Each structure stands twice: as structure tokens, then as C-alpha cells.
Length: 278
Image (cartoon, one colour):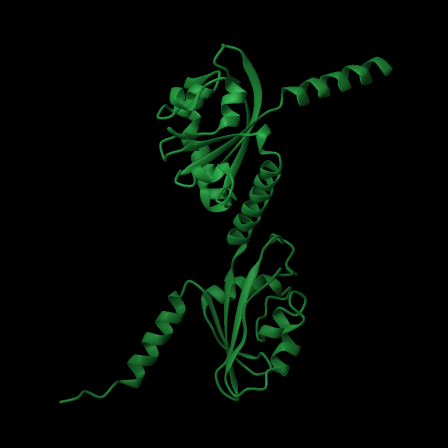
């Protein structure tokens, strides 16, 4: 015996799904008039309306995404995807809300009368992408003059897996002397660095990279003031074919180190010269 579906139960299940969905869902007419909206979408859209009313999607995002009306009007197929994952910066009329946000909108034409929209806050993703882009730019600059940069590959615990020739020039240590050891041996205050390393790796994992300055040690016992970037391999360009840096692509983290003593000396000279003039 085949049991007939209960339309009322199916409707309740659908409403429960929409209520709990991790993305904003809006059902509307072809002119944007809202007929159904879930809490996530309401939370995202309500701050865009100074008066607190939310009856029309197109009106809510008009100042943020004014092209939406023409995009919908130009879509001449009976059903289909009108726009997919289009990003825009929401314009918050309610000033108490932060304005450095990015939303993503996908709009579907369900039939001749109805549209369905899916809205998400992708601010965190955009920030990470920007950090990755900036990190990649740093690596591009390094590759253009990589002889001035040392590269160290690390495992997930911060032990050194790879050591390039530039690191030997910077520190005097050969790869055989350091590979397999914790990277804390590179720094003047190794114990302090070891205590901070988990936080540094966490920051690199979360943001794609982290930039720090620290005293590094050399084989002869001398030190140099270094600027270094810790990154995750997914965001760097060390995988470029033909680059010596590609050998570190099995590392959990990559450290790019540069001796900036000369920059410190130049800055001190400039400050001294300025103070003499004054």
C-alpha cells in the first residue's frame, strides 16, 4: 500500500528548513515584492532599511546594487538563473551597523510570476581572499629578487623541512645543520618564540599569512634584525615551475625571511639628520 503524502506536513517541513537554513532565502514577485523570507535573510536585509520595513528586495538593496532591476528586466527566459553569486557592498541606512560588509546574491526565476533569491554574508571570505592576494603579492616581489630572501619550510609543529641556499647565505647554517630541528633555533629568544609559535601558526592558518619582525641568529653567534612572513602553501606562489622555492610545496607552512638591518640603519640616520636640523 502506498501512503499519500500529507501536503500540510510537507509544507511545515519546508518552512522548518527555510527557517533553519544557513543562508538567506527570499521568495518574491518579478518586481521584488517579498512573499516569503527566512530569518537569515531578514537579519541581513533589515539594516538596509532605515524605517525597519522590509517588503521589497529590490528596494532594500537599491542603493547597494542598483543594477538589479535592469538585470531582472533583461532576463527573457521563462525560468533559470538570473544572476549567480554576485557580490555587492551593502549600504546600511541604519548607521549603527558596520558598513564594511560584502553580500553575495543568487537570483533564480522559478516561473512567470515568482523569483527566488539566496543571500549570504561573505565578508570573512572576502577578507581572507584579500589577505591571500596581498600575501601572494609579497611572494611575487620576493621571487623577483629571491636571492635576498631566505625560505624555510615547516611542518605543522614548526619543525624545519626545507632550507634554501639564501638561508645559508643569511645565517651561515647549512641545510644539514638545521633541517629536522624546531624553527625556534633561528631566533635570539628561542624559548619566547616557541611559546608564541602556536599563535603565529594559528594566525597564518586563519588569515593566510602573518608578518613579524625579530632578531635572528647566525652560525657565528652574531644576529640580524629580520622581517619574516609565515604563510600557508595554498596562498603562496612558491609552486611556480622552475623556481627553487617550489621544493617547499610539501610543507604545512612556509617562512620567508629577509635581513632588514640596512633599512633600520637608514631609518636611524634619517632620524638623526632630522633631529640635527631641528
